[in-house]
Length: 506
Image (cartoon, rainbow, N blue to C red; front, side, top):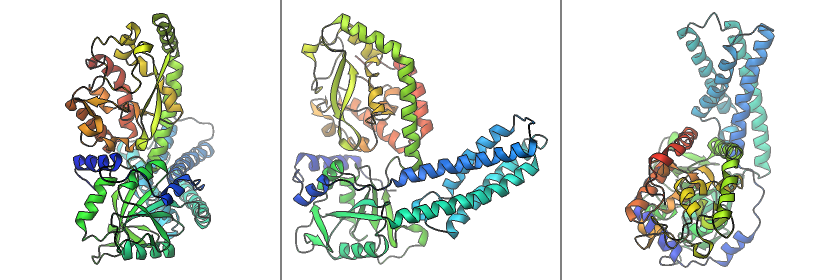
């Protein structure tokens, strides 16, 4: 996995977005692609997630059916938890075996070998557990062996059906990833031809981005239009979906490759370095493949595949439950706001969201209407005269953030993630992205109502560069180490941190 200096990444991104390094306007061809409707392709992440869920349910259901047929009406408290745990363990094992990828779904022998090896490992672990915990009297060996045999057959049948479905979708072109190539000239021409020969069902080529402007980088390469410079790709990817960035540069061009990666590091996309022109030969396992094109994995989306499904479910379930449980507090807050000062109950503010998109965030109004600051050009400080009496309390306790649960249901926020900042927020009179290293990289995931920075005391006023830097560093740590258990931990610790570490919240 690629690592780089976040400070340089921010400088490059500032240049791309402020005009100092590239013209902010995109080419007419790029604007045409942005304006065109996005084809109805299927999400590979969702397919993988659904396949994993169905496989776990299938294994658990088979275990329970065999239990019911074998033991009849007799009850044993050990069986149900063992069955459920085995279903989850099967999901973990098939992921360890790397069997839940679209490229693997297309295989026959390789896919079946991986799945059967994973299932055999799960049953072996289960048998060892029965022996270690001396549960032989509670768990029937006949049931276990029967479960293994029927489960193996069911998994093979399921994977055959899945393979057939994937092949049909592939033939229909419904699994293509929206892809751009960075680089131009003869190298890109060879790459494009190889994609058309072996990966045309996987890749939807949108165009090229290249910093060179001489004859080495013509405006059209093998039928693909040049859409702009590399810095323009940041704006392009913000305005239209891009799944994959494929870099067509020789490994020997180390300086160019690093410069490109510093610019694109802030994007929530997969970045692959093509090895099609490399004279160096590595082992087969050193590459991943797009069709028959070998590539090196340089950067991945922070949250993808099954994790994306888990994150979506976590957000929706927690948001609905929280709205139900906290509705009396929210209703009481609304009444107190109306009694305390004139103006609306809610306040809406534009903030940076996922991939730098602009979102409108809901909050309970905590300031006097005639003194509100929609752009947050001036941070709220201790004893700020703009804040109402009720506002001081709801800001201190973060009750003013509760309406953002509606943003979660709308898909604009997550429950847990980097906090979205106001557009003009400053530290030491400098905009956040000018003041801190790695700032834009925090937008590679969806922002959240609470986050790792908040439970560690970095919430509220960010009047100094050190404070906002601490926030960003915690946000980047969260992105790098994300897991659903990490989200759960942050959620549990949030109410505790409100009372233990709230000295900066005014």
